[in-house]
Image (tube, rainbow, N blue to C red; front, side, top):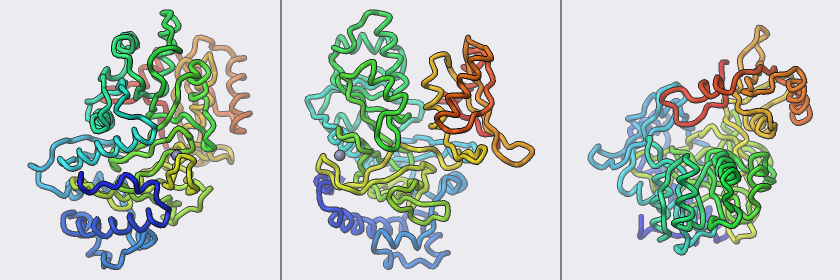
Length: 433
Ligand SMILES: [Zn+2]
């Protein structure tokens, strides 16, 4: 991997980037045919001559891979012997059980390189110090990837992990980190803690936050409610997003122009597909579908991530000519058809996050007797009045034209539903359809 790097490729013309990716794709297909039981069988069954797949457009002759495929045939995707596997992580599947992703030594190098590229995209250098506010363990890939990427960059790292604002602020004072990796919601907690403890957070050493897990921006790149909430409190902090999924072992990271996450052409090929697996035009939402380049343990071909995004191909002011992704509009299976309106949970989160009296919430979607979607929002609040319910409904009508059913609960009760055992993230959306 190390001899094989072309970190300048992202600055070349779109034609050069495409030609480079197509050369890499040919090598990748040979590897899959030789080492992946799943893909070898697919090529045989579908009578696919991989030598004929020469361009990115030619990928359309190949079937897509779904999360269900990964779940049903997990072992068949692994291309190496057990002794070559160094790290195991898991990701949630569609059928309940998690999917195991196995990484080799070279996959770990590739992952480090991916985050190195991400950090350089955000403008970080070896003079920076990163405070890691996400977890390194719990079978997660991300925290480990950031750690290795910062090492690759030669930046300093202080691993605090998630939570514990007191320890975060103590570390900021002691180590003077210049940027942090965090979940946006946690940044609001950090600010809250600083305000109640008279910490001069605006003048602290951290000048940039690279955010994961939740969007900061609307599809048109303006800050969403969460992004604005942080920015209004802490305008000195540059907010950038990075988007990744465990299966793709690569990320799309914003440069300081904040015009979407940049593709890393050395690591991944991306397509944007509709429900019939046909490419969508620029300006239409499509499902992010990826083909990994250079992954040895568990490479994937046309894997449908379930995430819906817009994509942009115009050159970025940072000089990169790579495809850029908007924030994730929603997950494919989570689309809600409600009273004639198409909604995705993030749009609902954005409204609820903006209502001061709403302490926490869970959105439930189920199918009613007519066979259409119903939405019940269970709101944790201390203000359980008719007037507040009406205020919430009016806000929904103003933003998304429809008002779901609102049910008030205690804040403790919602907290309990949000955090069942074995769960790594707070649940905000429950799909009962
Ligand atoms: Zn850029």
